[in-house]
Image 1 (cartoon, one colour):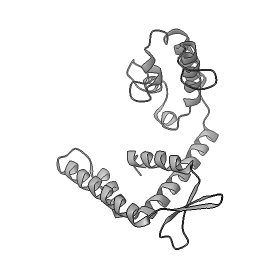
Image 2 (cartoon, rainbow, N blue to C red):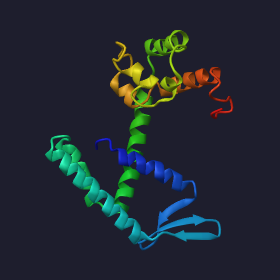
Image 3 (cartoon, rainbow, N blue to C red):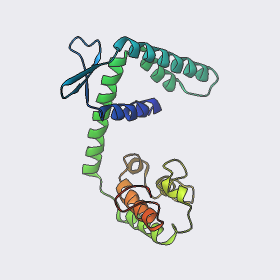
Length: 196
């Protein structure tokens, strides 16, 4: 299944909701129930389903227009169509299953692949020698101008981390640790783990 930003947005929202307590479908699968000690909060399932249908219909119509204009491929349109045809409950189940599958793939990848010494040396060398003149946004931006992307891409003539290792974030812990140390050195991050 192709990467879908709404999929990631869903999990961000789900994780925020999950902090409040444990959500589950009621026995008749008609509503969401939040279980907390001595309380039970029920959400209006019909309202959620209507909002879901409206939003996915808009997404599908937009994707259809983009496909007609040649802006997206048929695969993108098919993903939007499948999502539009799903019920909200089916979507939640599908997302959870996809997340579990991805976790299994990542674990299997980490079990069979170890960081390469040349890549680790390159990352440490880059931090020791080239990071001082970079702006703070370079360290904190997770997008296409961020450090991890630059080490992976060919922007400065590098392609030190292969595509698969980059997508599975094999070197991410090393990079995050060095970024944190640099931000502490610059006075932007506290040793307790928060922005100053």
